[in-house]
Length: 107
Image 1 (cartoon, rainbow, N blue to C red):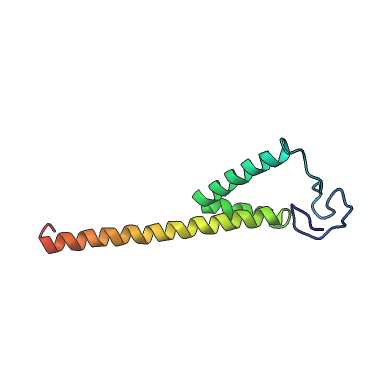
Image 2 (cartoon, rainbow, N blue to C red; image 1 turned 90 degrees about the vertical axis):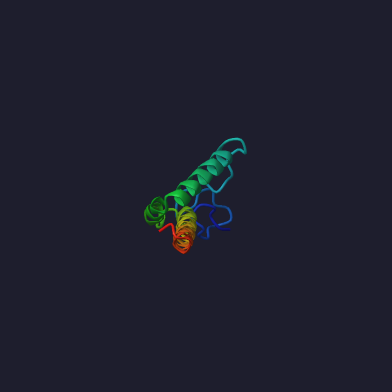
């Protein structure tokens, strides 16, 4: 079996992961898993909007929580890529507007 937190292989009968110390048993459905989902969504959104935060979280969590670090790094890269695409589109629209204005004599 593999640990849900760090992803390393552990004994099938283990109660706690020997690598990261997290419980291998599921917490009640109304308790821990719902909160983990909300925190994961919040972390993903934060890393998407501010890729530097995702990079920092990746570097901090890489050795202790590799699964969460990978998720933070993934959202940071997606956010960075989207910002690059929007920047290119923005400058293309501005360049088109300037070229259009020059051809009509406004500039």
